Amino acid sequence: MINSVDRALTILCQYSQRVKELGITDLSQLLDLPKSTVHGLVKTLEARGFLARNAESGKYRLGLKVYELGMAYSTAIELQAAARPLAQELSSKHGKSVHVAVYAGGMAVFILKIEHREDLMVVPRVGVSFPAHSTAVGKVLLAHLPAAEIDKYLAEDLYPLTRRTITDKKVLAGELERVRTRGFATDNEETLNGIGCVAAPIRDQSGGVVAAISLSGLAEEILGASFPEASRDVVEAAGKISRVLGFMG
Amino acid sequence: MINSVDRALTILCQYSQRVKELGITDLSQLLDLPKSTVHGLVKTLEARGFLARNAESGKYRLGLKVYELGMAYSTAIELQAAARPLAQELSSKHGKSVHVAVYAGGMAVFILKIEHREDLMVVPRVGVSFPAHSTAVGKVLLAHLPAAEIDKYLAEDLYPLTRRTITDKKVLAGELERVRTRGFATDNEETLNGIGCVAAPIRDQSGGVVAAISLSGLAEEILGASFPEASRDVVEAAGKISRVLGFMG
DNA sequence: GAACGTCGTTCGACATTAACGAACAAAATG
DNA sequence: CATTTTGTTCGTTAATGTCGAACGACGTTC
Image 1 (cartoon, rainbow over the protein chains, first blue to last red):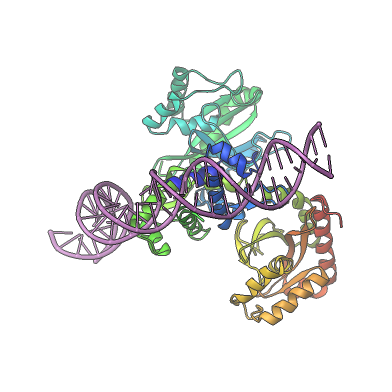
Image 2 (cartoon, rainbow over the protein chains, first blue to last red):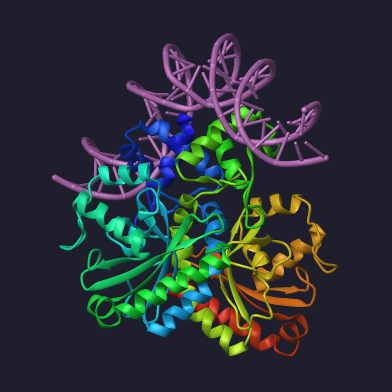
């Protein structure tokens, strides 16, 4: 692991959809490094277009190169191509939002969203991430990780997002076991109050789970009267997408 | 400029929408560096999620972190928010595709596309870049760069994309001057045979040109009978978007 | 309007450490 | 089964990234 490279990447990781601008001093505090060290790293990132300086504030934003590369992220492109038509179909049949997410570092990162109505905006925009232990897609992805990875996740703090978020390791471990046997996961107001989700795993030709698809709506609806149909359709859509990706079920 | 960081970023820059996977050996040849050096850099990039290893091929792809950061590229988010409604309006009025692009390193990078019909797919997907000297948006962006930057661009080879691409420095310099005085640029089959575009500059509160918007269609249509209306509407849309961004014209 | 604080930037000395090539193992290829 | 190419490891060396202090440029405040 190369020190300076790791630090440069850590600088980039400070940015998010919420954190748009950071100055040299901000970064030197965040990384706990001398300003001169950060300066050198930032200037290198700027020269390659990974950071761009805001003329008025003097602070740095993410550069265009980051955007270009982000749009070249082939995994998302391929998953989107495979999932979009079936996700659209699922969404319009139920009149609810559909999301597709992948796993990374304890988070479910959303790479596709299809919203049926603007009034129920669950995921602000593609690219954001939610904790794996509270969301339905997160639980699906978590449940199919290697055992060692699951243990690592369970070892960390299961922080609550709502009153219903599962914060007990034993309970979550049992829930993940249920996800594997049932073939789908639920989120009963564990991430957002009033919102419920049902999610199922998407597999590729290797048989491994590469993503998860979910249907979201009011918890009382989706986990109530329409639950049998919703869970069936989500699992079915996930299966169809998996087959598009080359999975031989 | 820090050597190792620069090299790591260069590795990332090897990837594009066309180049999805690269192995250690591929990269060591591309960068003309020993394999062991590349190996260290790649492992660092992988540890931070900027690269991900494909289990079957053993080669490396862009990692999810790149996607997350790309979706956090605030410049594009803000421009998209400001431009989308007006671009949509422009597109549906003319029944043609509309694009918005920004400038970086001699290229026009597309950050928004609104297609009216699927049969006329000019820009494959957002995030791709086209040469600045052949496209209408490119000429607009080029024309409003600092003089030193323009000279630098003109000093390089103006490679042709079609028979009509401007490859002469003097001619292009004159064309850029016309773009500044007229307030818009055209692309008369200079990028793609049969395709014509009209583009105008988008400015922010500082008055500087931050992006360009274009209307594309069959060259004989858009640069023929509908040219007066098309150029007027594109310039008008660009002006409205500029005002949304805080420009006081 | 002057003094202060804060910002990004430059510089040089020091010691860390990134870079390299060779040798290794592992897998694909014929 | 031989051969080539892959990714990986290791140890040495000199290159170079790191750091703190000092600088100049803004913006703010009293």
